Length: 241
Image (cartoon, rainbow, N blue to C red; front, side):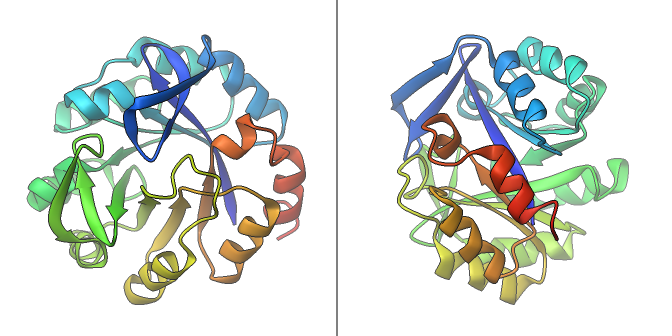
């Protein structure tokens, strides 16, 4: 199981939201690069970055910060938030980002995903499915669509997608454990590489995710609140497997 320490960027700062609310923001660092260096030093093999401003506004906002991270760390970085066009993907990859995560656009225009995979390859394109009560949220989690999360995942599979970041919004930033039931359903029905996101609060949570065969897990607030020591988690779940 691959572990992805998270860096959420808002106004150029490293923050965490509670349940996806842009009105409930906690700043952890004014210099996200310092956090990225910390995760790399702890043994991380990949970093997960979200441009929260970009997700809300629909266009990239924090590229300077992202570039500073990608330029300095030696491990790959995946980025989501506000990526809605082929040009957006090109811009992110030109920064040195390993792969991009596309969310809202996947719901609104599945054909775009086919084009993106044809252009850049399935190893560069990851779909972010953010759900609340099993329904997909879009536009920085501000709107709930009429799309069922598993149905969307299956549609994305038809487009050539191999990897999905599945986030349960109600769990995100709450340190109450991931949604094992919905995540397991997503894995079993789709057969895709599922990266679980939202609610990871302990090594026990990671054990439960490993038991349902997730491809990876994103860890955010639990790291910032010292609930999980990244190096220990990596040694337990990534390096020994």
